[in-house]
Each structure stands twice: as structure tokens, then as C-alpha cells.
Length: 388
Image (cartoon, rainbow, N blue to C red; front, side, top):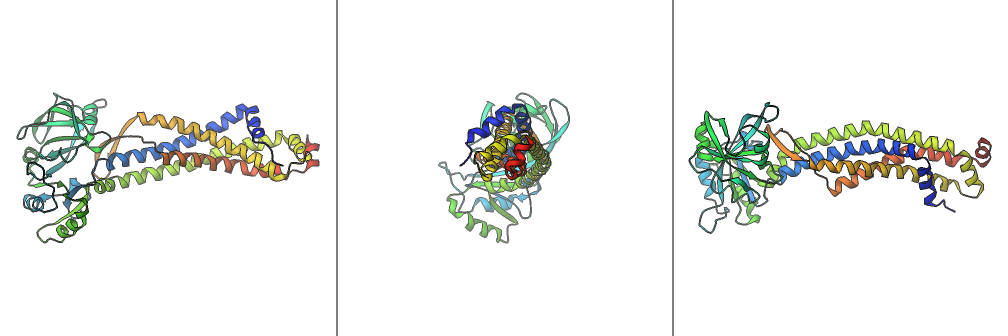
């Protein structure tokens, strides 16, 4: 004969204060656990969504990012003539030569300087990135000292707003537009004409070239051919894979940090749950003896106490996850360790993070309740009634 589930729930409700305090401790741990996973997921999603699977980024061999890369004009021309490059209706290839440089700009609130990506773009750059849309002003005119700012730059950095002037490369540049690239890394960049920027920074080579594949299945053939071409010293990657690699180091660090903090906090939460359940056993000695006298088996009592602990964990998990979900409203910025530039991104909650957080809370509840449950189940009828 099993003990009804309602018995366990009523006991928790009877001890409302201790139930709330214990569940709150577990909620705090789940909040920290969820927040770190959401932080890593948000960073990775921002960078991965920056790329397109049908676009190919070509950079210098052994370069970990565009900042370290150099592709000279002759190599860029050879790459543009490859048969895998898609051609538009106007007969022009979907091929862009780009320059990536880091500069220092002061932030609006603190005036502290931080690294910002300046990207020199070609006419095809916008065609290759349909997620980028102009929300204010206009695009810079070719051959002019004009730039457009990503939404995050316009909001966070001095001189980044429309009509303002930003100085770099020993020249003043007028911001004539603001673009929104959604939750991608492009929103944390400043764009201008690639030829003008190369002159300003005294660069003789592009940082990378970007193009769209005529047929997505042709990528491997293209990659092997250009990487073995003696005229070229480049490597090719799908744009999505390239940006995914850019996020791996930081995302891994955040996950390790999160797991470490969670383990430390979870020990306290488990001990708290264990104390609560041991106190429940001590207070209900007579009740346990009565249940045994009525014919309930040890395993039924064990199951009832374990169920209480699991429910405590579940309540804590739901509370922690509920409050963590509000973090999605916050946008934060950090340095991308691959490019050493500031990157703004948001916390991202996924179904995977939700079930991992709830599973973790149940594990904490079980770990905190299993020993007290065994103690309750091992009580003999005579000892339990005598103690009462």
C-alpha cells in the first residue's frame, strides 16, 4: 500500500516557512546555473548568427581572426575569378573585399576607452548580409570620409550616433547612418568604404574576402583547390563556421566558470535541504510510527520523503528559472578574446537550458532528501511511537 502524493504536499504546506526558505536557497543556485548557461548561449548565438552558411570567408593561413589576417590585392583578384563565386542578375559577383581594424573609443557613460571593430566594406557587403538593415540615415558614399554605426555602437560609444564625428586613422569621420543587424556581432561594428579606410590606416592588403557560393555543395572542392594553390596563402571557411569558432573560447570559459560557481553554491543548498528534511523526520516521529502501524511499508515512507525533497527541488528550480528568464531583457558587453573587440549581446534562454536547470534542481533535492528519507524508513514502529 502506497502513501498518497497529497500527503507529501500537505506536509510541505504545513511547514511553509522552512519550505520557502529551503526552496529559495535552491532557487538561487538554479538562478546562477541558468544565468551562466544563458550568458554562454547568448554569446555563441550572437556570433554564430553573424554568419551565413552559404557565404565563405577567406583569410590568411594560420590566422585566428580577420584582425590578424592579410589578403593582398592580387590574391583577392584570383579568388574573385573562381567559378564557385555566385553572380548577380547585374552580372557582378557576390564578392566583397573587406578590412577589419581595431580602434579605441570612449564609452558614453563612463568615458572609459574600449576596442571597437572598424570594418571596411565593398558594394557587395550588404548583399551578402541581408540581416543588416539601415534604421536611420543613409549608407556612406564611396570615396568619402563617412561611416555608419551599428546599433550597439551608436548607443554605447561617444561619437557613434548619427550626425556625430568620430576620429581615427588621423581623420575625422562623419556618422551618416545607423544600422541594425539584430542579435549579431555586426551591431557592434562601424562600417565605411574599404578603399578610404585602407588609405587612412596605411594598409596594402585586405583583412579578408567574402563571397556567396554559387552552389553550397561546391565548398569542399573550392576549399581544397585554393588552399593548395601555390599562388595563394589563404584558407577558406564557411562564414557560419568561422564565427562559431570565434565564440568557442569565451563560451567555454563562461561554462566552466558557471559550473564551478554552481557546484560551490549547490553544496550549501543541498545541506540546507538535508537539514530541513532531517528536521521534518524529527518532528514527525510519531506520525511515521503511526504510518508503519497502519501497515505502510518502509519503501512507501522512503518514497514519501524523497518525493517531498524532489518537490522542494522542483519548486526551487522553477523559481530560479523564472527569475533568470528576465535576464533576457538585459544587454551586456564584453571583450571577444579572439578579436579583442567589445561585443554586445543578450542572455538567451533555450529549452535545453530550461530542462538542464530543472534536472539540476531535482538532483539537488534528491541529494538533500535521500539520507533523511532512509532514516525515516528505518525507524521501527516501537521506537517511533515511544519517541512520540
